[in-house]
Length: 536
Image (tube, rainbow, N blue to C red; front, side, top):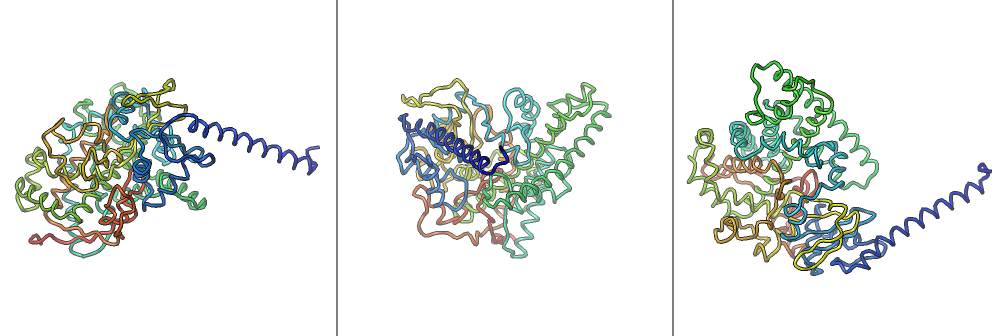
């Protein structure tokens, strides 16, 4: 009888035994694939796969963004442009693409779909599975047609006044820090700048809720990409994410419904070409068809509003935080930056802002400023692209060598490895903006086009890159001549932790990034701000 303890115990033992045997068989099948195929890979363990060696390299860095550790593995084990990582059952199985040709296979030569691991991440992070970066197929195309026209270089110039209004407020905030002498977590202050711009670009209205920036920043800090082994804290974080999401969704819905009513009442509707905000572009089709704002469209607006705010402001804030850090430890670059600004703009801040309002094209003359941002993005790429190959793909070829593909393989596009390859970027750990000013090779660059991919390349490249670059150029004009930033409490080391970079001797803990919605500084980036000489 099933109520008999000995019978229940026997059934339990049988069930457990069956589960163990099934797992071992699956494990053996996974591991044998890597031993049976002659694929480039780091040392492979029957039980751990590559998780053990990855863990050893992860322990050598201060952050949890793994591209630095994976790249060092590539160098130490002399792995080629393509190598394999077997993380099952702890994580995905990867084909790592670490060079220009391999990276192009999934992004430009072909356009592989977004991987499930990315879609699931945005869903679990409370952003939503219909955020454009999480979608594929017809839905991605629909969203791209709505949003992309509002983020072209020409469209970005129409947001010039938004950016300058936010830049003036940023200057005032940093001026307050310089006056007080306070040591502060600088990303917390820099982040308000892109957040307020993205709010206006998406919703077309002035940003009046500073608490929403703080909540969104907190959402990034407790995202599923941040490792958390404590199950209690993990549960509390999940509840907190849900609470923050409800606040954001309520504010987004309120703005969307109010704007929908305004468009319905308008005598003349904008077109998707003349619309002044992304929200209008999403609403126009429904208004023109005389249809209500239904649940499906509201879901698209909500998920993409949250995604643009969280991922969009985070990437710009993280990158600009690294710009200020690098300029603080490479003073010769800061001086060249200031010299360029002095050539293009008046010395007075208000006059500079007015010059930019009168002539937004002045930023096109900021070649060195742009190079500073590009070099920062080379050293600290903001994310890793993961794509899934077509189901019928069995192999691919690079440089005459054939690489097998198995079901469940993900293509990991390792921009970091390309960016630190000394054959592509000589002295790769040196901060040298000049490498982006060369004029002797393809496109005026000193390296192959596919080698540099901070915003990814191809059809699914980051739509917001034009806006992000313009935001950062103007932020540098706003701050570089007027303030000095000093990085403190960052724990620089005497001996580099990894052989391919010595940036931790200058940036300390922040030389290795931390995963949030994007890859940013590791913990608080504490800085002291002072007035630049002769500006107070």
